[in-house]
Image 1 (tube, rainbow, N blue to C red):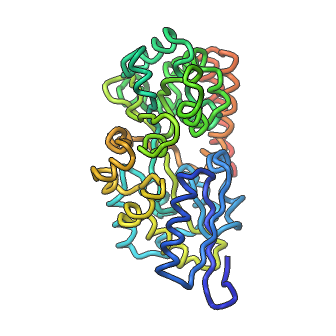
Image 2 (cartoon, rainbow, N blue to C red; image 1 turned 180 degrees about the vertical axis):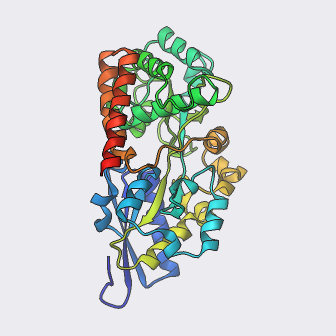
Length: 389
């Protein structure tokens, strides 16, 4: 994170370890270095689980640019582990990125009226299916009742990632869905009906669900033995890689998740590039982040390299949609109406604790009321810790 000894600039980017992140960054780094030969960019990666749960403060000193999840922004604002981009980029640049992003992708990194990252990658929770094989046994489930009916009628046909962070985020989506259709108290974070539905699904789903995060389930559905893989998953973070015409194995299809009401709701995912407070070249780092988030780079570099652009112009482009086999058109309405997770400083630690507690309860089939009370007990502890910190 300094000069290379010859007057140049060295930057290190810390990704999460999936081709959807690493490959576009490598392609962008090579393109940027052709434009700016004085800059050298090293690309590293950390596990997806660490991206979801590891505090940014633990990695801020290891790279100039860090991929972060939007619920982390409250923590980074408190700790000043990264630099607010208003200190490094012109207001016009930030405004253009916000106006050009899909859904709330760029705005998700705003906290306390400061921009803490640029949206490079966009995603939300969606459904995934092996459409051809599913059509032999069932229509695509539109409601949670239809989904549970499929899971009962065709054992092993349904799976859902139940790694702790994924389990709790699926419950966030289901809870947001109930609140959106006025089926739950707007102030209730964890409606019992959502918990009961997830509990029943966990008992009916492929038992390997407890061992998998989204990429692992998608790998199983696309490359596993045809008579031994699920046909459908109602909630996971979408990956264009598995729907592209160039996908290895069976091509999967992504679409809107089941709903409790007329319109499904889901939480926003994706990833943003933040500039570390420890960077020796913060202005250079911010310039690269802004360029990588811009529409032209998203279309001409990120998309062809297997990335999942945050630029709305790419999502609505029919030619880009063809590159991803219809992924954008199939999921655009879901991401444009997706919900932000809490971004308060207490949320990341609570998400980790709640996820562990939720998965343990789902494994033993605990009563929905008991799960509800336990999640709220942990929530009160997390908020009290933040108030007394």
